[in-house]
Length: 116
Figure 1: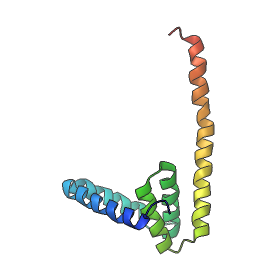
Figure 2: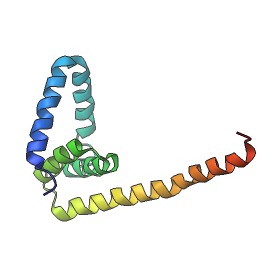
Figure 3: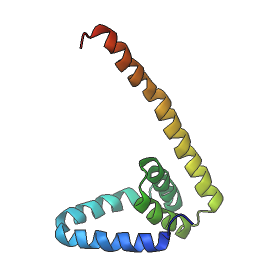
């Protein structure tokens, strides 16, 4: 196992709670935004969590990963569903890297027109 994810999640939530004491109004706003994003509309709770988990992978947020894996499992996500959501995230990152190469090549080509 790479990390003790349960300990990691618990320690992280403890630190976040301490931060919330320092910035209560900010945290109220953040929690309101989170609640709004989590409201069931067209997507069910499991789908919300699979999306959140995919985003956690693309942003490389271990804390987000640990929280949303637990929530996804709570809402019935299987290991296979999680793996499929992660495959979408990996594919998106690969596509983003590929399309971002245009910026690198553009920067290189700009060197030709610059004297510095």
